[in-house]
Length: 178
Image 1: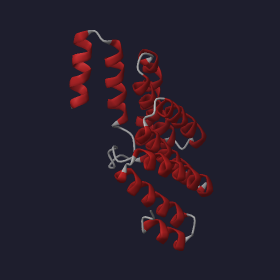
Image 2: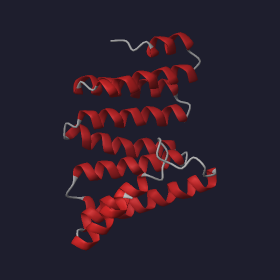
Image 3: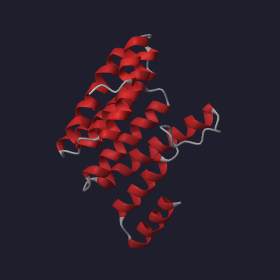
Image 4: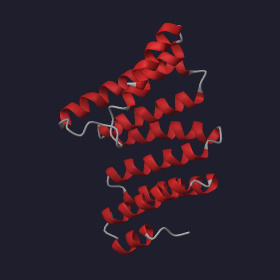
């Protein structure tokens, strides 16, 4: 609802950049990672992911003046590709977001990008690479002194280790090492 109002205001103000950003934020709400309607069947979720990806790619040109909005758009593309099980494309898109965030020293955002890359790699069954990515997230969250992010990172590492069949490593991760 809030992004629908933002879209209406952007249209009234004649701001192409804000209009594109609000459309992309609305598209993000249709994707996984805790935002999607879980009552949808897999075909409906794939259709929404494809629509979100296509809309985001179409609107990205209007975001050239805003690195953070561009990074967010890349993240949306990555999440859509993840939903579509296009894991290499998902990682590539999220790496675009991470490069923008790191260049501009947005440490928490960079950490979350690496968290998402770990998720993509884990879902693809590449647990060694997922481990490497989540270690990157931990490093950025430490630099940012982001305690909440660190908790999410260690929990994700535990899930990765569980999926990889390493219960002792999972237990160690869940103990939130310092």
